Image (cartoon, rainbow, N blue to C red; front, top):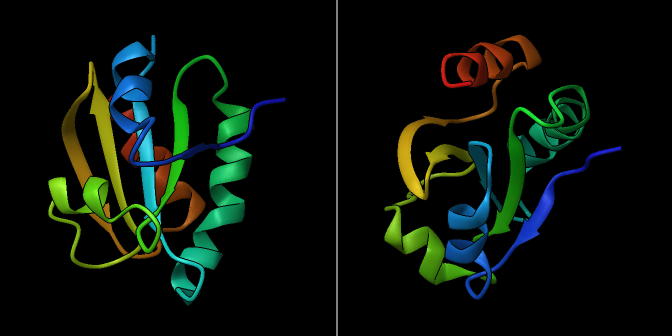
Amino acid sequence: MSKPIELTDSNFEETLLSSSTPVLVDYWAEWCGPCKMVAPVLEELAEELEGKITIGKIDVDSNRDSAAKQNVMSIPTLILFKDGNPVDQRVGALTKNQLKDFINEHI
């Protein structure tokens, strides 16, 4: 059973570069209501799409460097990375179908 992985400033780049699948990174914070709406959907998708995509979560309050490098200004921000490079992003709470469509464009 796959779950989203916790990312930090210290493991962020290594995780992106070592992944054999695209990585969808959820930039979130504990106080963010829309982030809490997206979290269970990402957990479902991590399980459903296991082996096709890696889903990671990074708390922007604790990991400001990684958020700043991607110019994350609003949360939730979801950025899809391939081979360690950002290829697409969405900002705001998305439905499960919107997230699946976004992911399926890149896997």
